[in-house]
Length: 421
Image 1: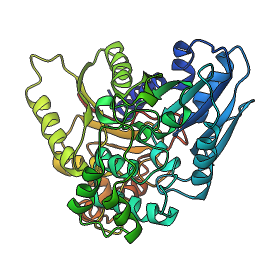
Image 2: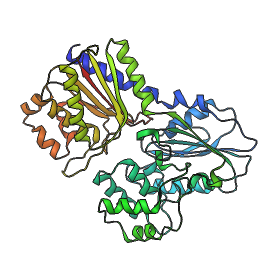
Image 3: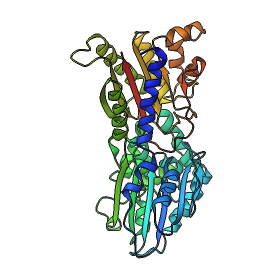
Image 4: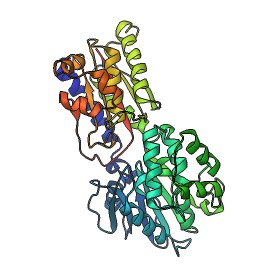
């Protein structure tokens, strides 16, 4: 393929991965049976508003409820209220929405049905601090966890134990009503207790684990947070809790399904897809080095693989921000990849977040081509310095290689593809 055709091919794969996780494709196939009583819809996450819209279009009967999604991710709904809030650092809109949502669970009966629409991003969006903790206390801890590079599982453990609604507490509050959760996963391994910090799923983690995570990263947490974690008085509902007996959780879209959709695009183009994993974790720059090594190996010793091939992976890496750049795990991965490839010909790559937002920037990701480093240096940009400064966004913006999609209204985490011609 020509260089521009390589990019177009990789973008087709990314679009297929996103398309496979669109709520319009997966909500209607997973509707629960109608109840004798009321049907109440609640939810949170970057895809939750689009999920609510898809539900309304497929449901025969009245619906009411409340969804909390990210700013810019709202879509029109008839009976379900949509509230927008901040992500990844919580704000008052998310806190007020969470409080109202929890209040809606009061007075439900065994004849009622709660449909919970949960997707990635819900941990920050549905932020209702536990008693004695302020919103600013939670913001401070959230910022520290993001900056230190903690993996999502550890972040969610802490979030659950500072919350009045996460870690199964929302479902427990709905008891004795039936609760059916439809989940679009964005977490490694599709751990349903981790998506959106599992507001309707039993939580196996403990206060002791949350305290250990705070200590592990040396986080200077506010005094109220330390007191709450040390007291450990109100543990999250655990597996087997009778309040969660009538709760059903369905995984309706996942990273693996999206990677498989991208692989279909490759096969139709006569290119061999190799799915390396849907749950890769670790520092983005380190994953970039490893992936470059695999790509170079495939380039040198392509047989017995059919050539060309494309290496596909997903998951959620982390960035420990030490410079003045904005971070962004996909662009950090790509910049590290480019440095390790060092201009190797016939290798083109894409990395982008399926929700359209890489880190704190409204940019999905970027491309790497064989001439990425040369073009940067011709502009007076030092790629290694950009990486050390965690400035992948600035680097790829200067080259015009960013991928900007706007809100995709779904979220199955990162998509990475390396085309080895």
